[in-house]
Image 1 (cartoon, one colour):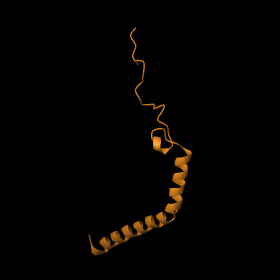
Image 2: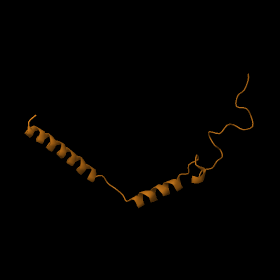
Image 3: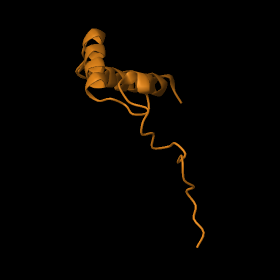
Image 4: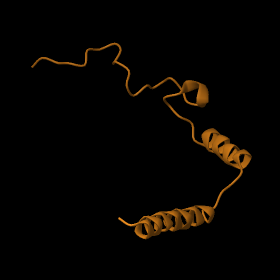
Length: 75
């Protein structure tokens, strides 16, 4: 390759990168404080049954072993 084709290839890469960066600038962004506030509000409004400290309850645990009677039966 000649110097001119190498330079043209480098220029093409730089222009492509520049276009990608311009596209990223257009992506809407919100401040971290607003995002964290939104996440906290969501977690308070939607309790997680698998995390008891986050508003869920331990009973009934859908993955717990059945207590009392045996789950298997003989016919």
